[in-house]
Length: 155
Image 1 (cartoon, rainbow, N blue to C red):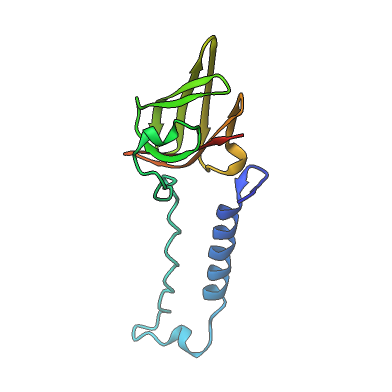
Image 2: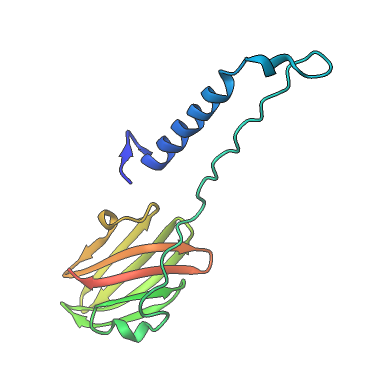
């Protein structure tokens, strides 16, 4: 979803829905408004707050946890902090090392002969946030406390 002045569209839509619900419940006042037995108006229940996402869970990766499937620089795998992925030397990049995995941020480095690239992605994880290094694209599809799902492809 595209941000609006730095605010994710999801948050804007949730706020608009909550405001609309409050307006609808606050506009009552017909015959039921004063019908409580003690003469006071019964309180209108407020809508439950929308849960705020604390993590971006990714899809089930096509290649599971088989890091060897990345040897052609084409894979979709679940990784954990410290994992080393052999990329087979595609365009001079031999290896991707996962430095940190947090629910809302993943950092990694790519290595080759005389080459070192560092990258990171923060939630929301979108196609636009994919990192491209020397012909290899790394896109975080999601992350949680247990790991992250990476889509690695030839850029």
